[in-house]
Length: 218
Image 1 (cartoon, rainbow, N blue to C red):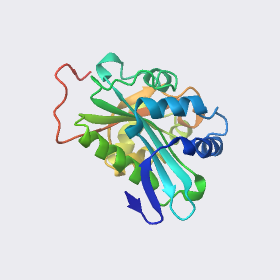
Image 2: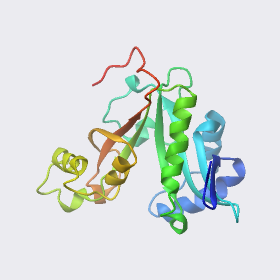
Image 3: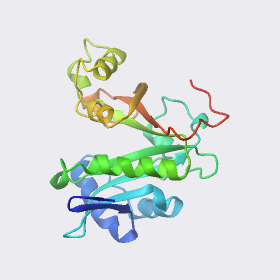
Image 4: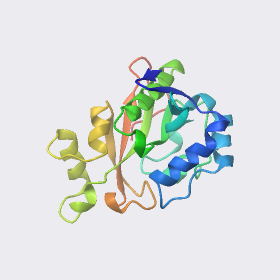
């Protein structure tokens, strides 16, 4: 998949050092993915790890990491650490995992506003359809919520963003990109003061695949 001077492709081991550098830039207060973690992601589910490459320079401009989960084994309020087995993706389930979980997506600040996040998400949606999965799920930060948390409940805030009465820097973009909200969740990320540690559980349903028989909407 190509977009302007970029192409979306699967991650390869030679990308690891550049991905670490982008992690340090985008998440300066967090420990970046280690080579061992990235290598594990690649070995467990190579078709689910995407890179946006700047074609003229061959530079990694952004990434989207995914794994397959059987969501009936989890609770909707589970944190990122739980859903990713602390970032190792050891819980990837290629047999019963009918949900593609979007574990992480980030773009180098030098390459933002080029439509790369949208293109990376489209690549994941195509994977959902190719592998005949039911849906894709992710967590959306709410970086506008801390400013109004004293007077607005998380449910009210998310409802306002969904209705268009209020804009959130992240959730509004996800809604525009075709995601729908399942519910607000607390403690999805361990340290997100801008969101008052709240997030929204979001999903995209594959219209070509029915839900798995054992799944129950909670």
